[in-house]
Amino acid sequence: MISLVSRGRRRAAASFLAVVVAVTGVTALSGRPAAGRAYPNPGTVTGNVAVHDPAIVRGPGGGYLLAHTGDDISLKTSPDRTAFRNAGSAFPGGAPWTTAYTAGSRNLWAPDLTYLDGRYWMYYSASTFGSNRSAIFLATSLTGASGTWTHAGLVVESRTSDTFNAIDPNLVVDAAGRWWLSFGSFWSGIRMVALDPSTGLRSGTTMVSVAGRGGGAIEAPFIVRRGAYYYLWVSFDRCCQGAASTYRVMVGRSTSVTGPYLDRAGVAMTAGGGTQVLAGHGRVHGPGHQAVLADTDGDVLVYHYYADNGAALLGINRIAYDSAGWPHVY
Image 1 (tube, rainbow, N blue to C red):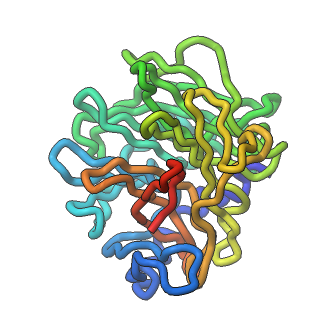
Image 2 (cartoon, helix red, strand yellow):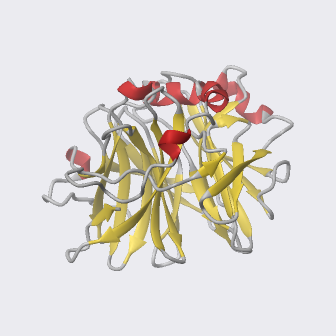
Image 3 (cartoon, rainbow, N blue to C red):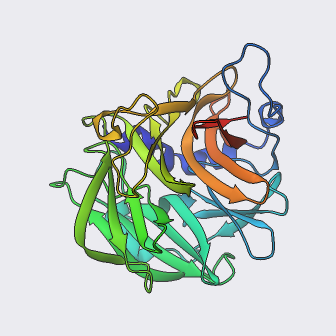
């Protein structure tokens, strides 16, 4: 179970990185929906677009930093959110503090990026395929460049006796300025803990459940505040099976950062609820592990998907909100 599949992707990350840049036909798909299609294709991206579990942030100079699953956490940069180039890894010398959770592997998963208070904050996961013996760590950097990341400590961990899995972190700052970390994959679903803004590390022992599918496939939480609501984005179903992947992007919302989160039909996300925003279609397979970027031209959904040949690629679409405040991509 678990991010098993979803995590299989992680382990396999090194492989997809090599497999890819040759798939130009998919990366150049139009960002507008064709007639009769339920979902739009990804917008055009170029260059080094082989990614898994992407996170992106706009820096103070206007350029973009993207981090994704890979050995020592893979980095990419872009001047315009379209052309991407490889930019090394966060920890080129390795991250020995993680190896107790990775069985010695350097492959680290699902980073989350935020630029706050004059620096980059990156939460990321260490685990092995199919296990919830996992941990989330924090690193910070003034520039985001390879080799400049400082290990800031362990944030939260899970053991095989726990009913949750400490992977797939995401930082959200609520309307009162409080910091929270959501995380989770399979097991009992998505959890949340409070953080100390002065350190970025965990504050207290309280852990809140915000979404779950009774042990089923849910992971990759991402929370953003828009207007009166906090939106919880998650991925349902199976990743990491190439073109056979069934990953899809779901959302719910709440007036409180800790929930309860409900979908459009009023079903609680703790009871398996979620409104579908993006799913596989045409030559786009298993889109998921989404992040939301608040950019100068509006909100943007960033995710990975699989091409027909099984390569994992970067997907980017714009987000719009309907009159009831529910998001859709275009």
